[in-house]
View (cartoon, rainbow, N blue to C red):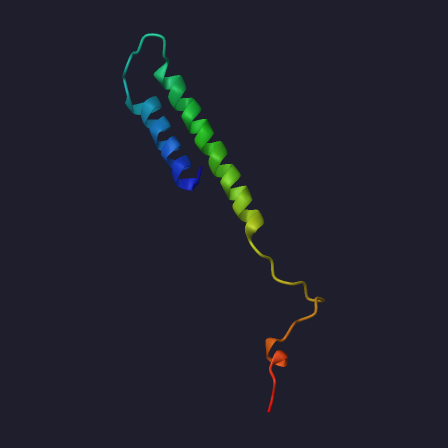
Amino acid sequence: MGIGGCIVLLAVGAVLTFAVDWHIAGINVDLVGIIMMIVGIIGIATYVSILKRRRTQPPSPGAPVVDVEDNRYYR
């Protein structure tokens, strides 16, 4: 589930919790909305933590620098 799906879960959960006044026998619509919002928040937090790990970090100052131009043949 991507970040879009998590945002949709959050939005639908908020609508169910705060904007809907339905009464369905055997189902607490407010609780379903709260659960959907919690799942959306957990999904966004997980996605952001995975995205943060995927970023490449620049080399440290002591690391050797590879120059691409040294590999060419001169005539």
